[in-house]
Amino acid sequence: MIDIRKRRSWALVLLGFVGLALHGAGASAQDSEYALVGTLITPSGVIENGTVVIVHGAIQAVGVDLPLPSGIAVIKTDGVIVAGLIDLHNHLVWNVFPRWKPSAAPRNRYDWQALDDYKKMLSGPEQRLIERGAGCDMERYAEIKALLGGATALVGSYSPTDSDPKRNECDRGLARNLDFASGLYSQEINSEPLEYDVFPFELPVSKAQSVRDGLSLGKLKAALFHVAEGKDASAAREFRMFKAAGLLRPGVSVIHGVGLGATDFQDMAANNVGLIWSPRSNFELYAKTTDVAAAKTANVLIAVAPDWSPSGSNNLLEELRYIHSNASVPKVFSDAELVRMVTTNPAKLAGASDRIGGLTAGMVADIAILPKRGASALAAVVDAEPGTIKLVIVGGKPILGDATFMEELLPGQRLDAMTVCRHEKSLNIAGDTGGRRWSQIVGYLTAELKRENLTLAELQDCN
View 1 (cartoon, rainbow, N blue to C red):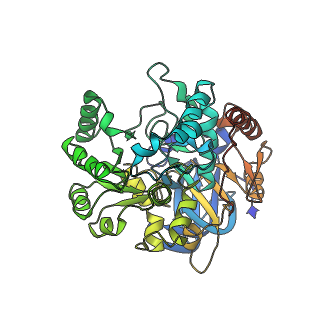
View 2 (cartoon, rainbow, N blue to C red; view 1 turned 90 degrees about the vertical axis):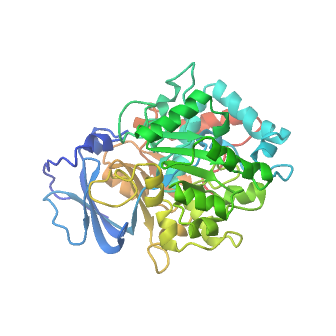
View 3 (tube, rainbow, N blue to C red; view 1 turned 135 degrees about the horizontal axis):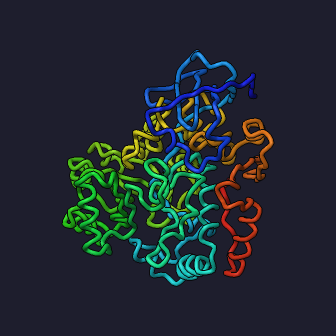
């Protein structure tokens, strides 16, 4: 698998932000230089038998028959190499809970949030687990679920509070937390240029003004808001409220948009407002999803995201497979468009396309490697089998993958083991979890959920 020759120093500085690429990486990852060989999915197309050169946490070169420095490690993946996927719609700490189906058919999100069984199975236990100090391990478990689906950057992370503004220090490491700790622009916690809000119409007047000002002045690169989640008139009315609040402007994206129509999407496109689509959760809760055909016709920039796993998918690869295989989902996108909807498109909507979202020289080395599947490299992404991901790298640091890759990339390091859908994986996470091993995190969460008469959620849907 890995041809390692005598290694020599290769000094290189990439575009002045190599230091920022080293999100959560230890010294060995920072000093590493290696090349990945396989089928590459790049923004400009598929490259067979291509090479990606990684130096000090960033991508140094991409192409075919590249000249390689003497002594660099060459990893022959026999797989499909793609930029790390980007999840712009999640609620991570909730992803420890098992799947949930509302006891009544809701018309909008306010309906199901008022149900007793939602309070019993989700909101009550979530609050009590966090009160008992489980928030950080809930976040870590959810990030591993996301990484298993190829996502190296995400939003919806464990958040600070007014009384404890640093409680989410544990967001550092593992995946990039674009809302609180991405490592792309600063190493300071809670200073990201991205706003993510679930209830934008409950924002204090001063906060809403701050968001508008931040977007106008460029201090905020992106603002992502849940709008029109539901199929009734009240959900549709949210978009009119959204426009009245002055939030229909460049840098903003609408999450869900189930209640929107063609003229709404035309308004969004005219104002460079994006759409984040989560079809599985939409169908599970409302038996319908966003009119993405109308959104596409209007030329709205669209990203795909899984929402939370109680009603959505466990990760982005699962969500893509749901779109690809479920007969209810509108078939309006090609495989190439779907891949862009989890890489380049969300990078643009997050205002981070200069850092992440493509296999391109100068980007940070956030990478997912999948086994080949079918006749097309794109099929490896849009129809990936659960648990088969070969390797996930964040900022040049291997986080999880097949044991052979992980052990040879990280010789002598103590790795954690896990089994996902009968596939054995190794984890390199202790440096990002305060030293907590995977078995400790799983054991602790299992015990805490048992106190609530619940079981720990699956990592992936193996069926």
